[in-house]
Length: 244
Ligand SMILES: Nc1ncnc2c1ncn2[C@@H]1O[C@H](COP(=O)(O)OP(=O)(O)OP(=O)(O)O)[C@@H](O)[C@H]1O
Ligand SMILES: [Mg+2]
Image: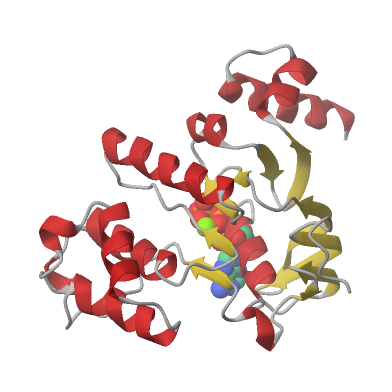
């Protein structure tokens, strides 16, 4: 059986992707462990969304191999097992938050309790009767997240889920992510804010379509001699720059 719990949640070998006639991911190889939080970090345009699209199977790849939960990325059996929250909120505007979440709950065979839990988890209980188009940007982001959470997938791929959220809510969400990981869910969370790296068990650091490193926040500190993770990332970039 390829889907042994000891195998990584995601295994990528020599992945190359072209978009708009340009190579945007260059020969990436990486693994993502199960039951933990992996942060995908790097500046705008470095390829985070593209890499996530590859993992969930919505991106045409030029070459390379990608397996997710022991199956080829995009396999039909993965549809119910991997939740993907895109960078742009994707909820129905003409129905309420509760109806949006309940819709996904029904789709994935979850009950009313799961709907309540997901809405509470993203702090939208107070706004659950507002329609999608009556929410603020941050609330729309959170409603999208609730739609993914309610499915209780084995793996959650979240593209910049904390952008536009206030610090209190951010802390709450990271707490939720930690609880999910402790329960065995694999999380891949992108961000371009290095502060958020602190919440992750492991980091994938990207720049210009290249993977600079895959390591833990503590390993990044040790490797660079910088305590501040933002400085550590910059130090890594400078070092790579002088090598090439
Ligand atoms: N639809 C597209 N057609 C052509 N090129 C694209 C397309 N989408 C993205 N790109 C290019 O691919 C590269 C990687 O983009 P990607 O969206 O993966 O970056 P990102 O790290 O997610 O950035 P951000 O932090 O701004 O979301 C960029 O150079 C971008 O211009
Ligand atoms: Mg992106």
